[in-house]
Image (cartoon, rainbow, N blue to C red; front, side, top):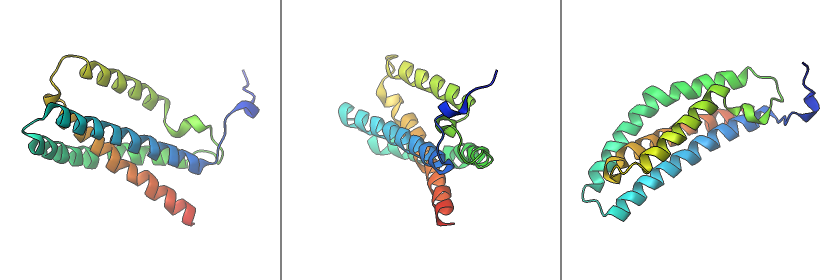
Length: 146
């Protein structure tokens, strides 16, 4: 079965780097804002400690986990044709992973677990996503400059 490529929403490959980085940075900011919002709403007395734990964990997750994912995705994107489908900024496996993570996040937020226990986790994941997104933008800038 041959698919007619005139209906494919093709874009210049540089848009894929921008979309991937934008998704990571926006989701990261959302998660960090949720954590800070919970601290403010709950008037948590350990706010500094919870954020410090999240900061340290986020940097570890960024360095030892997410940077590898970003590098793998950058390599995949750079091997693509010049005008790939706009939705290929993530692999199909990543779309599935995002759906699972969103479902888990929804479940956690509505599980009755006190937000006190979720603050550091959400802040760490958000910070790791935010920091890792920078690599997409640095790569994009290097392409634009050349």
